[in-house]
Length: 116
Image (cartoon, rainbow, N blue to C red; front, side, top):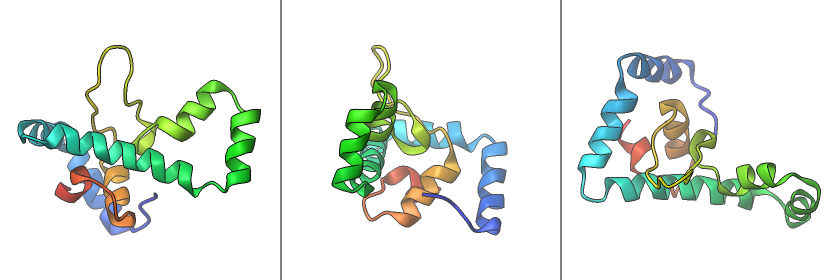
């Protein structure tokens, strides 16, 4: 998903400059199911990305690409975020623009884009 409206882009850039990535993360993490909602947004994004490929394109990726490329296409979340690296399973917000674009463009997007 890509945010194309220059007015919305500018408004979200202003939120990022004012530190709202961390503010919104804290807000989500303080909610009882906020971390799960954020994880779900990332998982939905990864699934939607993979599902947009036609079966023959998926097969080509699986047989012709590096493991890193396959992982990126199948498993990375909103804005290419690595969901589970090392021992940490806590997702985070990398880019408000990407979360908001996902929220606006997807029926399955999670709470992160909704609160922006």
